[in-house]
Image 1 (cartoon, rainbow, N blue to C red):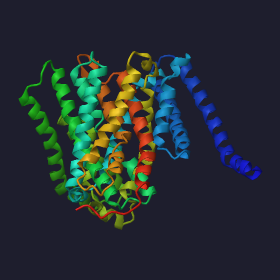
Image 2: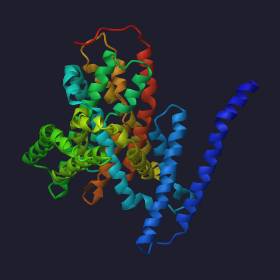
Image 3: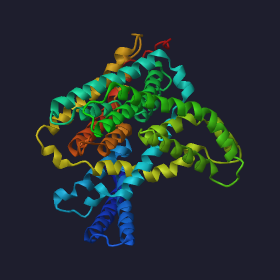
Image 4: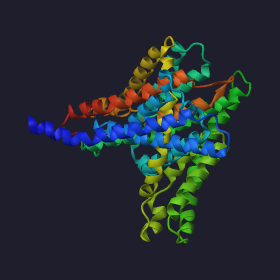
Length: 456
């Protein structure tokens, strides 16, 4: 027993000291920010933002470390840290309130999101999407439709005073699936090569594409309605759908022919880091073009990642450049946590005191789980583990937060489509689905160990 206690001290004492030291540093920096008056010039603005970034980045790593020690995604720790920072005003400290609306922090967070969706696209593969078969496509379709309509209905029930397009947008938020979390669980269990895993991962990739198209269409309808039209004409609706689908299809078609030539030309330049610069520039260009088409920039970023294949930049690898995923990693490590901490900062815990918001958060979480669980009904082969397939689609993770965050920037009748209270409920839903899905998926997979033949 003594040996076990000593081992525990050896393991956790350094971590405890690091935590206390970091918390003390964060408190000192927060106090410094709190004492500053309104910034008078550019240098004071920059200084305040730099101190804020120190707090955000250190806090993100502390939260991520804590949650990873309990075998949970680091993103949950980043969200919790953000929620603590953003609600210090409840304790009477208002020195960090400016972070909720600081444009420079929001800009860095948005760049982080664009790169995150670029990375998600890189991890997807068009040829693999074509090979997953009808089952994965049907699972993805049910995984979009069921949560969409359930979320719409729950929002209409709990938020009758909100515009009906706000209810529709809540449904769009529930369409997302976090393929990264499910893939990690499947890999840890050694189940990544099973028929269920192939269906889940294939459906999750298709789900991302369809979910982004739903986001583009719903956002376009909201922007059209915000121009004064009470009901969007059917012609306008069809144009929005055609524009969304057309951009993605055109980007994929043109990109497949353009990107190999672009990277072959860039490889003629021998300066170090050209692969990273070319890839990120390609990502930003498609994100910009998506914005020109009236779509979310993340749609273009995802398309850019989906287009790039290792064979396109093999010349860079042959001369000793790091693989693109490795080159992106330091930039992602710096920028992506800013987004998740900022999402946590924008959670207004006081909003849960409003009548019905806690009930809405609970109902939203319930239909988010049930909606994805319906995916199992689309599996025709009864020998497959339908329960595991449905549970594998449950985690919302980063994509759900991104869609909800975009909703806070969309305005309808002078008010944000996603209000702070609705956003707070959405964050709770994302956190719960991300927490409960891994253990439930492990249970569903381990309860049936007998191998089954691959689906046709």
